View 1 (cartoon, rainbow, N blue to C red):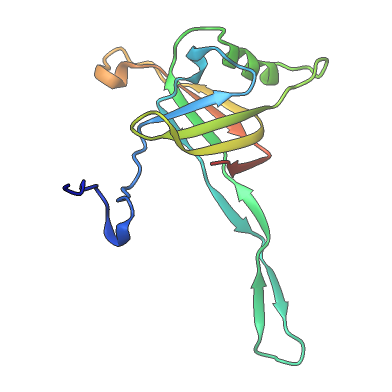
View 2: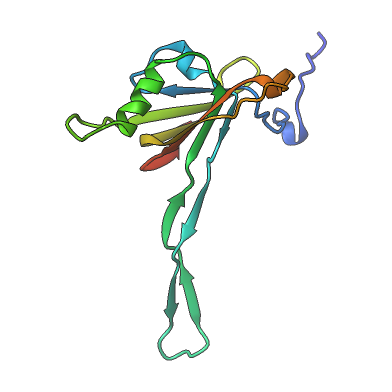
Length: 166
């Protein structure tokens, strides 16, 4: 009986390829409207250590150590073609921009999933306690054609923490 040949890479493991960035999904906890999950671009998944602490070793004049400080996160930026007015997401964002503090501002958890070719998540980032910082509607141009003619809505969000959950 012939042994079935499988597609294995070096060391007998399946081959691994770099992931592509065009197949992803975005979802907001508590917003189930499919219109509000369609984004053309996600950026800002960035973290860095800031404010390092310098420690000088006693008795050894030349020994200086740099300890890590706090983690700092960039804003999460979501872009999409402007679809329609008064979606659940736009209402949630406007609840922050027009709030007079007479009603509570509800933060949301946001999930960004990078998907494989079958639509299953390879990476999922959870952005906890997010709220809008900025909403921008792109400019209008009467001579634009193709993709440049699409009105782009950009939503910038701040969040308390994020982690990779798978």
